[in-house]
Length: 408
Ligand SMILES: Cc1ncc(COP(=O)(O)O)c(C=O)c1O
Image (tube, rainbow, N blue to C red; front, side, top):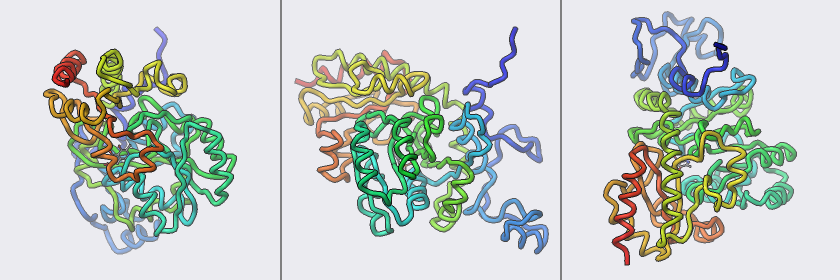
């Protein structure tokens, strides 16, 4: 039998992040639930502050913590799976996805312009539109499915420092042509930051396609069990250093706590296993919804009817994920009725948990997004978003069926 040399992503996920043998031989990662670290003597402490050799490895948990670092190495290994030089990359974990995104944007785009995708998670959109300008960063929003518009926007704004997009946009399920946009960003001397929350590295690996920075809300699929809020930013170590991302994180204070990092690490171990089932169920639920007479339209990258199905098939691996958006023929009222009548599916925002969650972006996650931007991005009043869980697909479908039946 031929011995495989490259481990599968399943094996990488299970063992990701591990480095040191624990002093007591603990099998699982210890939770270093401490705010500060003890120095052997003054010299060791002073050297740590001067970042000199022989200094203490840890100082204070707002700067770094061993449990948090294990999570950072773990997510970094998954995002860099299959790259030639994964050792060139590093990661920082945060207390939320928004902490990773806002800190990342402030560090990478300081004093410059951001060209951002029009359909984005509501708080990211609000941050770019309302807070970032007061901090010296301007943003223009553009439909990134039109590469010509992206190029025009980059030409119009030569001070652009960052292009920002979601690999699969929340909530419209628009798939970004990361490879082509990365080429445009490079040609205009700007960085490309990708929020890979919906896709996860199991389905899309933005670095392989030319992205410079990957951010995640680890609250979602990476954590996977709905138990923790967290975020992470991954980039080449050189870029993290150059942008002073560690100093931004230290002084904005957004690092993840050790307990949250530990909970998230447990999620990392089963990410490929869960994503496989999310994607399998996602396809079955999307096909069911598409064939339902009360459903007007389904947005799922795995369906032939998705406007970027061919692109999705060329950049996504192992399926098309577990997120679906759809419009009911009866619009808003029908959406409300559906959400009020499901029994197995839970009416809640967030996504990527093991159980199926359903919500209404226009009144919930995207209610804070500017009306014009919502219209431009296709976030209509009748759009329903479903995060398909890992229950039996037939049970999820049966629940949707009974709830759709109730509508007139
Ligand atoms: C795509 C995406 N990015 C970022 C975030 C923000 O993450 P968090 O809630 O962990 O701050 C969310 C939250 O829903 C999201 O859906």
